[in-house]
Image (cartoon, rainbow, N blue to C red; front, side):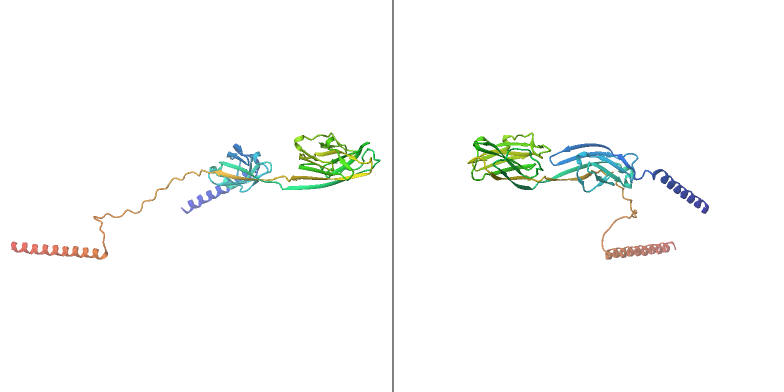
Amino acid sequence: MIGATASRGMIGLGTTILAAVVTIAGGASARGATGDDLIATSTTGVGADTVTTSTVWELPDSARGGDTVRLALPDHASSSLGDGRWIAASGAVIGIAVLGPDGDLSITLTDAADDPANRRGETIVTTTASTTPGTPESFTSSATSRLRADDVPGAFHGVVDRDAANKYGLWTSTEPAVVRWSIDTPRGPWDTVEVVDTVTPGQDIDCAAGVSVRSTTRMEPDTGYLVDLTDVAADRVEVSCVSGSLRVAVTAVQDGEIVEVAFDATVAGGPRDVENTAVVTATRATAPTVVRATTLQAITAPPLTPEVPAEPGPRPGERLAATGGSIAGAAAGIAVAVALGAAGALALRSARRRDRRSTS
């Protein structure tokens, strides 16, 4: 018997060693593999601030603990994932998920994924956007231009700072003396840009001649002059003009757009050196900040465990009757039974004596 027991023990040990060798040789190279996709069917709903994707999934047959599987969720891109536990329908945590910036979900599996009961499930992926409005900011730039009596139009040579206001003038007539002032606003985008120009004494703005409001996004590379100017839509422009000052406001200035405001002013006494300053105030709100957060919710349905019946206890012994009472009552009952037994025995002996006498 001892020999047989030892023999079985050696066989069991040999089987264990063989299984270990097969595991190392056949499975080590696959552990930690990356690239398999989940077998999944997804349905996505998009709301105002929320995107919800319901995914019914199953692990590929080749996936094992330590491997990484993927699930494409493009509607959940640019979001941060909080709790990344990937949970099967059984309720077991079988991996840890990481959401990439492009919406690809990478799930690194744990050893629990090797259990056949933990290889499928349904997961609700929800991404919620939280928007913080931008804050208003204002930029003010002033530009002063001086025009001499004998200045004539000519090519401009230099660098124009298009992130600031610029102003220049030219004579359009000498009798009467008329100067055309032009103001270029800083490059957009702006919610509103406002130009205020107050002329110096001796100049009168010709409001009747009208105010030109044009814009462009293009410049002549050598001179810096604005080119391809077009009229700004009237519903974007507000003009206030009196002889001594001009105010022009333009809304919805697009990215890279530059607005040119031009007007005529007559100069009393003929051409002479003149100058004045324009003040440009541009306002806009900074871009809103959008933060997206993603959560995972597993739909779990753990398998039902059948109820195990309780094992029967020891069977109580049979008895004629069940009575209740105190210990003293039980003792009294025993005394009565003894007395009755003694009386019966006495009666039996008396009967026997009478029987012997009558025989003799």
